[in-house]
Length: 114
Image (cartoon, rainbow, N blue to C red; front, side, top):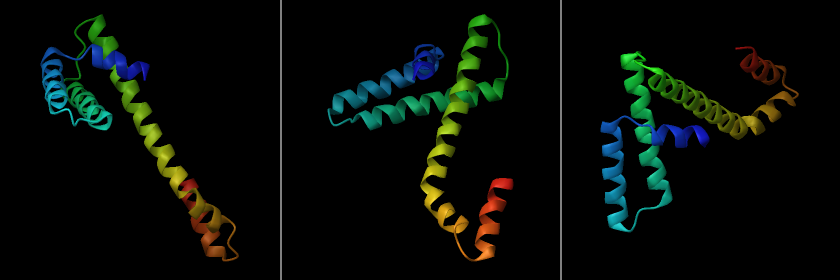
């Protein structure tokens, strides 16, 4: 969360303008949920990551630090997605590993080896 806050506070000006505009519009509708707000913030972060990958240049120390925070956020987001995916699949793996059928056990173990 600390990394996300830092990124949102230090977005490039064109992204800051776009996110502020989208959040203002969301607030005007009064139907905006916190989930929609989070989606807008995440979209801005993903856009910043895409721009960073395209440029792949750090002009100064602040840009370098922003780049590092973006990459950390991207890594943490990917790790959390993997953990959530793995947790949702663990019951299937448990049943496969405890199966009396050898091919089920072998397939479950192959997944971990890959």
